[in-house]
View 1 (cartoon, rainbow, N blue to C red):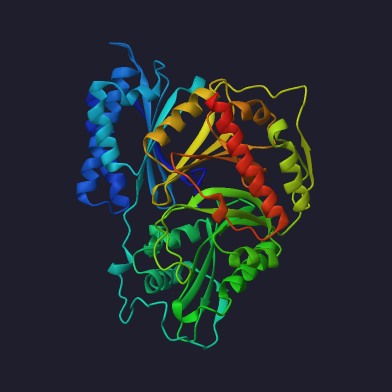
View 2 (spheres, rainbow, N blue to C red):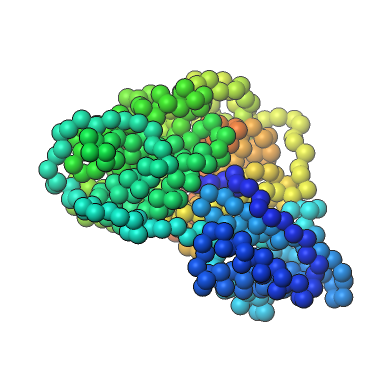
Length: 497
């Protein structure tokens, strides 16, 4: 799951004169904002220090000496996150140099000490923006009363009592955290699922739709989530599939997926996508039986730390690949897609396999006008060692911005790096060859993910995969795998010349 846009609210925006004398007043305001979300005193103090250091950096670098000017501080609230943003229209300077100046090293350390994410954004004629994302502290599951709750082993005696499927409500979130604990202890990779208040906020915000199975005692014994990038999105990603060991072998995963599909079809969703493991055929066959179709191959998508019970006796020795599936639920808008000569034919085959109303073209005469600046969202999933670069707008500075973000991710030693390109924008055709030169190769297509289809390319950051261990269960899945591996090989060979 990844969030692409803030899909939250702006709490406060203040215009500040570029003088050090006003920083204490701004810090007092930050204390008040932090108090709304129960930040502990130690973290609140660190937030003040970060605000002071970031404001000083802007005052010193964005304005000439003795120049009078203004900058903005914006407080935004998204589900589970407080964002403190700084914007100014002062002197242009390359934001990537912020890390290189000796006198800025301390400031960067301070920012990273408190921030869960940091984004440096070029706004073109509108200046520049620094975002500091801080996760809101919520109670972990062990702070709630869980009398009688224990972690079950895979060999737990089976419970054959009937269960009921339903959509989860926010007030049931403690039960979900307890289910995850019973099933995985504290080893589940998506740690937000151990914070009931975070789960409740995601449901309330419309970013999470969850199907659950409930037994006669009122316990949640299985869960399948559908995650949306924004509340008005028409396509989501399934995830957080959890089945209590006592209830395995009853086909609950397939039942929940079918239940979710029926629920989302009634809501008017276009469909949803999912990733199936490639080391065995079972989940792939389950997806195909429900009407899902392969749309891509994600090499090394699953970290080696993820443990598949009853499939391997020990943890994986390396990252495992996944098959990307899409299940169509309702008719989607007619669209023209620009996949370039590189991916024109494979995108056509994917669209035809899904019966999408698409016109896929490789060449055109009139290219869209470039904007003055690019907008590329960057989302990091450290627990999965994955990063996503989501292109929202092409600008004159596109390749410069992309290279800077790409380098930042590589230096953080993230294993899998993905870039999502808007197929409805004909500028995608222009930039595909340049993105290939960076080492990105084909991953797949996701229809209607962000009000349009996206072409996903992938980059493997210094690790290898073993193609012979990738299992595909359909002829088209095998064709996608061959195309992906050949594209990877061709791009590597070209870049080595």
